[in-house]
Amino acid sequence: MFRSLRTDNPELVRVSVNGHAVEIASGQSVWSALALSGQTTTRKAALSGEDRSAYCAMGVCFECMVEIDGIPNQQACLRRVADGMTIATQTITETSVAK
Amino acid sequence: MSAALTLSEHGRSALVLDRGVAPGGQIFRSVSTSPLPDRTALGPDYAAGAELVSAYTNSRAKHVAGADVWHIGEDGRILYSHEGTTKQVEAREILICPGAIERPMPIRGWTLPGVMTAGAAQVMLKSDAMVAENAVFAGSGPLLYLIVAQYLRLGVKVAGLVDTTPAENYLKAAPLLPAALGGFGLLRKGLALLSEIRRAGVPVYRNATDLAILGDQRAEGLVFTSDGRQEIKADTVFLHHGVLPNPNMTRALGLAHHWNEDQLAWHVTKDAFGQSSLPHVSVAGDGGGIVGADGARHEGTLAAMNVLTRLGHFASDQRDRLAKPRLAQLRRLARFRRFIDRLYQPRPALRLPQDSETVVCRCEEQRLSDLRQGFEEGARDPNALKSRTRCGMGPCQGRQCGPIVSGLLAKWQDLPVQDVGYYRLRSPQKLLSLEEFSQFQTVVPDEGGTK
Image (tube, chains in turn orange, cyan):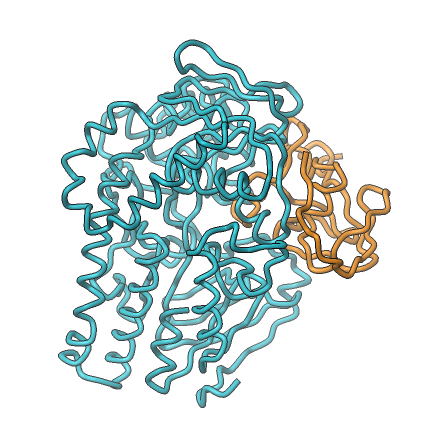
């Protein structure tokens, strides 16, 4: 389980993660919004469709690609949250594209 | 940062394109804006980074945060994404600092959600003050022990430390110890971390082998052998067994590389000042070969001295005189590094997958059995195997599978890795939308060096 160690009172922004409203400290990574709200599946694997989640958290592995405001292939670990942002698990796979 | 500071001291400016949101790279990430209640829990080395960042921030260097460089041309043309648009800049002299990435540990289940790297734990802690409670840490090397100690200082529970350092490494590394004693301070720091972990009562398993992640849909723990078969339940497993130079930028530019057997890694071929096979391109820090944070600072300074000479700012004998103490420091650090490399040299069975069903290419989901089939069908080098299997063709562009593929092909043919080679990489080095590419803007660096 992920948790935050913050004890300051950071300014909060409101984002939506897979349709759930989540309040998160301004300036934090999009990945932290997913992890702290317990929705850790970032994308479906391209062939098998299996769940994947952030692995390196530093922009190298591309496992944390999510859809942000409807745009796919956004690396959740490199992007910062913004008020009103819509974040969703990326569900594009080879089969879904072929359809 | 060190290179930009040196240039600044000599009245020259530099344009610094940083993918991060604030100066500091991975080691000093968020040091000046730490969200932690007490950043001293991360240790004195981290806190000391604040001084460097502050000096850098006050220098003549122009820092561009969030600049994701995805193309560097031999002609000095650099393309990068910044705030949703593509920007272009031309440079006479280029210093590339791509840093390190973690060495992949392709064990069964390493693609399951809940499996992350120790570096990821560090990033999440530094950037977002976010931790995983009751996680398992598995692997070997200083970074692994450091993050466990940091978690404990912050009151975060750790389910176990599974140390994969082979018992025989202690003997193999022993002859290098006297030469490494110049780095005694570093050595003492490492030993202090381990005793701190033991004192905290975290179960430590030594000489661990045969690691596999438990779980079908998500990570549920780790199984391994250490004095018999062991199992630890956990929803998060952090893996780490050393770091490698991040190769994509230097490879895509076509710089010469060579295989370094001590570090079991590809290094950029460069001179003492970091000058690569292209004279106007230098490389400093872990991205050229693993030198650590201290080494990177010296290398940055040396590269800047060389650039100043190339720009006619001072003569080469003056450069050499100024460089002497830095070069001596680097040699001292290198002796210590050789000891660490030998001591924490990863187990071959953890560097290369053992189980035919283990995924090698995380993006294209190619398993060991798929690669073996591609090899048997005639693919003899990484590029041929890539064309045949799609291994390395996904969005990460081989950053994870590349070292494994070179290693497997070398093993199967009983050839040195140097002869097998690596993927041929090309720009762009990130996923790019056509919309972003269409919003093109040319940036002219401010020669006067004002902010």
